[in-house]
Amino acid sequence: MHRFISKRSWSLGLAVVLSSASMACAAGEPESARVSEALVGTEAVSEEALRFLHCPAGGDMFAPGEVSLPERSEYRLSFTGDGNTAYYHVDLAEEPYQALFVTHKVNGHWIPGQIVPFSGTFQDSDPFVTPDGNTVYFSSARPVSGEGPQRSDTDLWVVRRDAGGDWGTPEHLGPNINSDRQELYVSATRDGTLYFASGTFDTDFNVYKAERRGPGYAPAEKLGAGVNSDDYWEYNSHISWDGRVLIFASLNRPEGYGLGDLYASVNVGGRWLKAVNLGPSVNTEKDEFHPSLSVDGRRLYFVRQTWAPFVPSDFYQLDTLCLLGL
Figure 1 (cartoon, one colour):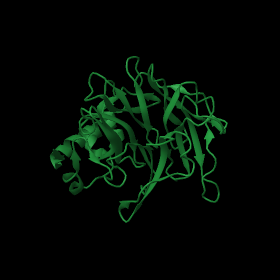
Figure 2 (figure 1 turned 90 degrees about the horizontal axis):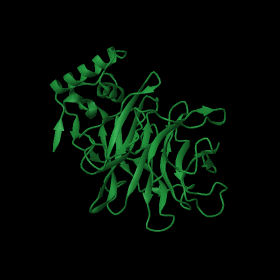
Figure 3 (figure 1 turned 30 degrees about the vertical axis):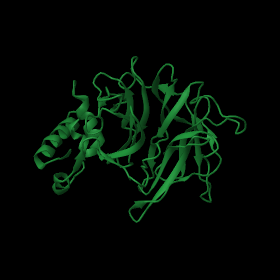
Figure 4 (figure 1 turned 45 degrees about the horizontal axis):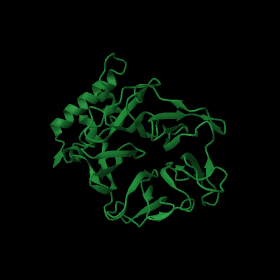
């Protein structure tokens, strides 16, 4: 079923947002109000646009038949700043079984994706492209030396374009970020701070950050209790470009709608507020994970998966204004 936000419901939502912004230092402020305000901002939006804002429960499939294809699973979607180039990870039937793809929007449609030049030999996943399109961070099981068999754990890597616009050689992000655990799903802020998940599939995962320090990174720090917990997995974290909003996936929380749900936390004065479930605008009885935000914060993209029976995953999307009613 589709729902449309009327002028009246928008007015109520905006009142919450403005009240939240004006009471930023008030004690006991609901985290959901802060998340709403941070996600959609308070910029002017026309009444006409709001009156016909399209907010289907669970979002719409992104680029069906172009990027989201029924016969395969796609994961982690990341866009350049102009929204016309997208990177994503596809599960393959043959080795290396996971590879990074790129696609471009031409005349309003996404052309068939192709494996990027720096992928296709080892298992690569979770691409994140910076808005200028010149840097891609990703997860990989490739050997650190560049030779030999792939690793049993996944580390984080980066690749940059050279002066001629060609992709260089991927670089391992080093021991301050990578460990003998699995490091997955990296994203970056404007100032170069990285956010990612680290853990093992036999134990759990938590979200970490690593700030830029000279040519490298400071040792990774585990985020606090507003994001991480002792009882549940926290993974697939995506940081907004301004570093203010963190969206992540978590499994089997009691307030959840399905196996995996998407949550969001807001950074206030260096502290991550208690994360809130993004609600039925996004989450369903199925498995939602792999969130990404557009650079301007107006679109949320994510993956939905059905496991029983298994249905290949696809990308979904919605306008973040639909999240005002968290």
